[in-house]
Structures are given as C-alpha cells and as structure tokens.
Length: 359
Image 1 (cartoon, rainbow, N blue to C red):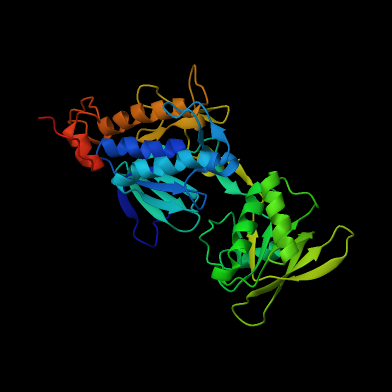
Image 2 (cartoon, rainbow, N blue to C red; image 1 turned 90 degrees about the vertical axis):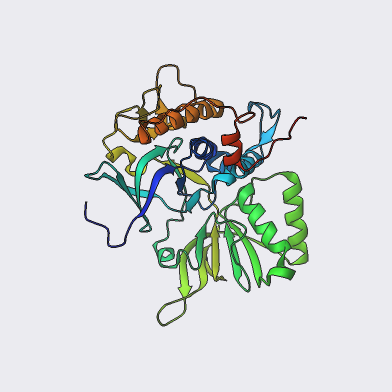
C-alpha cells in the first residue's frame, strides 16, 4: 500500500461501527483508559436500531422495560460522552494495512487516514450504507445538492427541497422541513415517491394531508431520471427530471434533493483483510474477542463462535471482554483488576461523577 500523502491521525484505538454495540465498546474502552476514534458509514451514530426501528420499542435491554431504538442510542451517546470519543461519521473504511511496527493504517473513502494500535470491528452485519438512486447524473452533486439520509440539522435555508422516498423516515423528514418553513426559509418542500402510497403511521399521514392542503408541502408521484443544472463551473443543480406514472417526463424545481430510500448492510473491504471467517462472520477468541489477526478485535453480530446469539445484550457482554483483552494487549505489564463503577474512585474520576459521602 502506498504511503498516504497526508499525515495520519495517530491513536490507540479505532472502533469501526457506531451502532449500540460500537458505542458501548467505546464506553468499556474508556473505563480501561483507552481513547477511541469511531468510524461509521452513516451520518449519525445509531446503526441499525436508529435507522430501521428508531421509533419501535425494544423490550430486552436490562433495566429498561421498554426503550425505542433511537432512545437507546441517545442514552449510549450520553454514556460515552465523558470519554470524548472522536467521531468520523459518513466515512467508510476502504483499506486496512498492517504496518512494520505492528500498528494498523486505516483509510476511508473520503481520504481520512488513521494510524492505530488496535482496531475494533463492531459493524453488525456490515456497514449500513444509504441506498442511492440509480441516476449517474446525480453523482457530481452529492454533498452539495444531493444528500442521502442526512440529519435534520442539514442546512436547508432558502432551498427548494425534494425528499425522495415513501416510508416513515422520508415522510418525517419532509414533514419536519415543511412544518418549519417560517423559520428555516425553505422555498418549497416536495415529497416524491414512485407510488401514490406512503408507508407511514396514520397520524403522520394525517399531518401530511393537512400540510398538503395548506400548500406547505407538495406530494408528487414519479421517479428521478435526470438533472437540470446551471451553466459554468462549478455547475449547480437547478431541477430534476421526473418520469411520472404515465411515462411522461416533466421538470421539477429543486436545488436540494434528500434521498431517503432506506439503508442496506455491506461487508465492503472487510472480506479483503485476511481475517478468519465462517459464513461471512468473523471468528474470534471468546476470551478476548480478538480475531485471527493480533490487535484486531470484533464484537456484535459480525462475529461467530459456538453458542453465539445475535442479541444486543450479548454484544454488550462481548464489549466488556474485548476491552479487557485490549488493555492486556496495549499494556502487557499492567495489572488490570476488576473494578466496579459503584465503588472505584478511579472509574468515577474517569466518568466525571462524584458519589455522596457517608458520615
């Protein structure tokens, strides 16, 4: 592999995957005094629970009789905050190479380079990446006029917005943007779907009908087949070419396209890293959750071993053992005693909490 043109960011640990298991791995590493950089293909933490069932309750998390996927992620993000992890979101790892000194050089598809002593793969069934519209003309405008599953904090001021998608997430994005037009200065919001049926709850559909009736939101049936743009360099997207259900083509004003077509898992380059695998899952040592490559650990649904169960609670258990394994790897001469956050002043200091004194 060629030497990167820019100096890499050096760190002790990189966690690939910002789903619940990846976030909890960051927390457990923090308890061991190990700071982590976190890389995820999505634009926000949360992974599968936040993206696929963010509003659906989960009933088997200890101590939480019911919690939605998004609420669980929010609490995990808060829990790891004392350790100040460095997030690299909307980055997919494109290459990993072992260096002569035993460290690992990770490169993402956007040119980020990390040099780390250990790697944790918490990628679930793969990196969840947004599905894209099969329209090559959109590619040059990605990141400026075209965004896939962006957060609601995306700046839409003064834009003519089209949201492409037909599920709850797409409708939620369109509703939130349209409902705030008085404050965000959006020119118009159009929800575009290839069918005249939106898969969403009744309350959201009623809200959609209200906004459509008031002119705050438009709904159009059709598919994007092309782009119109301004002349000159660099070109700016000015509109979309839409194919309607009757096959007729029409123009639709738009300078911002938000694509909400769902996400899908991809193993990506992981299969090229010469790690022992069985049925597209990584084989690990269940004492430390280290893979066949020294210094690379794996937890969650991406791993397999006798008796493995693909449950969040099992992934959380794996994070604990992996963190102890990582501490032994990084600090072989250091004693790593078992401590409890309820009584250990060291752990409480790391967490930034103060326990009440008893007189």
